[in-house]
Image (cartoon, rainbow, N blue to C red; front, side, top):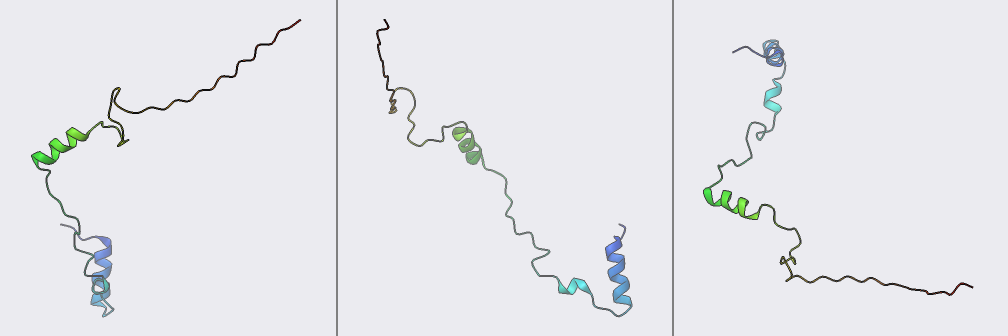
Length: 81
């Protein structure tokens, strides 16, 4: 495998007696902090069961939910002569 240009420059600096910048890195730079795991069958089934549900937690579906609609009419009958 070939060396990168950055690594070549770092190696040259070390050969010349200058500081190695890799020693200044944080110890967490090379650590993968993510937890990776495959979804279980139950996780997949839960995802499918919840897919497409309404976002309103009070929604029960159909005619069971409450609904308020207020509409006011003002009818003016005028007699034109």
